[in-house]
Length: 431
Ligand SMILES: [Mn+2]
Image (cartoon, helix red, strand yellow):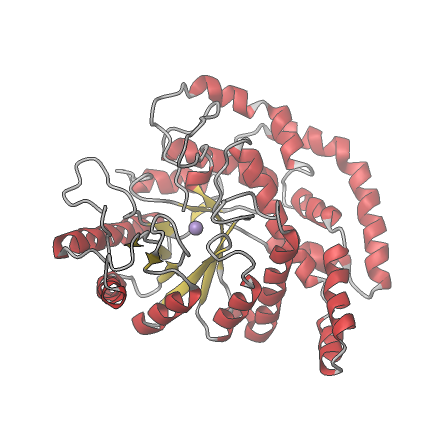
């Protein structure tokens, strides 16, 4: 496997931090042993954790007001993969890459797949894009895509999704994520029921093109760009559509796509209970679909989501395997640094959720002891598992401190030279 950051530099970085990590790990191991927890089991679990990177996340995102490009942004999918390889090399937690078409469209999927394999990467779910018009496109999506009144527009949107499946198939992906911005900005603009009927008709055609071992993820979002009535606005609509379409259709939960203060962990529990939890787009949010770094605003919510996932895994066993992906927009940070630290934050929530004493929690719940039930969760959440995450990275060949190692490597300055800015070159969406 080829590495992008010089492996000698990563080893030197680890050698400097190794003694400190060993001391922290031993201290944490002793504390956990007194709670009857084997730190080695947690470290082994941490090493199995993986969250996929969004190809569109390695460039600067921007808002609807402006985009302030960063230095050395990737200009095409090959350069995006290089940046993803750096993130995985140092974190060892991001082996998957989620591509977005047509932004990442390639004429040579065999070469792209080979490039990914050379870096120890694979392609996770592919994403279609019918929320903007592309140059030379025959029918506009201004008034909708899969729900458009015009049959020709709907057919074009369906054909694009089927093309995404074909491209994904050549790249080794196993799922298609469908998000549409379709909806209305005015009461009366469209027939609420009619729009969903058209959506389902279009989705049936896409579903029929899914290979036998593929899944289709339906991503809902409360609002934006439709500000009055988004067709797939909530998990209830997503669930109803997934049920209607069939077993291969599942719901995708993007943490930023809900009304403020929504109990997202409860949505996770519901979807898991009924076998429709397809996967996640992790990010964080303060007001809306902010696409902030995972765990940067409400890390306790992220922990509670993973607490439900741990419960579902205990009930469902190996069969329960939702897809984990990051979906963030980076505007004031180096995207590589944000994605590295976000992957670690999601991994942290995963490990903390393993720390919950489920037998004790069940006893507290059965005894109606609300206080101790809450404490059982808080005890796990308050435990600083940083040494476990660092040890997992070290043992898997990553960096003890990925951001520090990345900064010391000078990667950004190097690619800034090799990638002179080109107007409109980076395709970074906010989905
Ligand atoms: Mn998303």
